[in-house]
Length: 137
Image 1 (cartoon, rainbow, N blue to C red):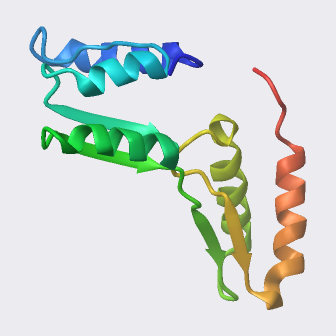
Image 2: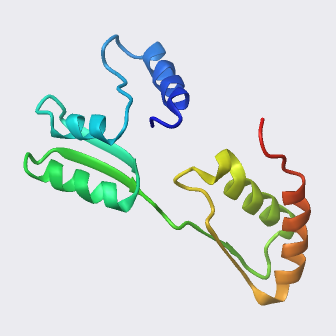
């Protein structure tokens, strides 16, 4: 991502450390850079995490050459809390998995469904835990 390039760079560097030289590369930039990569005949496979709209454009571009494709698109990941759940653990996980990395993770919790019988107790725990988080570093 052109918005957070260092995280991608760190992941690629970790992979490069254990793989043969030249096997993994990194190109960073905005949508124009991505479009050139997707359309390049030198690229055999495209993997992208992002919006559904961008995913549709990439899929269309890959279809002409039957290019292999993996898309992880704007999910709406639910978190479900049943009556018999461990409420302390459920609240801890619901807060952590919705707030980690500012919620900018493809599998971040985006919706929480709670059984009515435990809703109030669950909410109390979530509010208490969320208050402990501090914005910033």
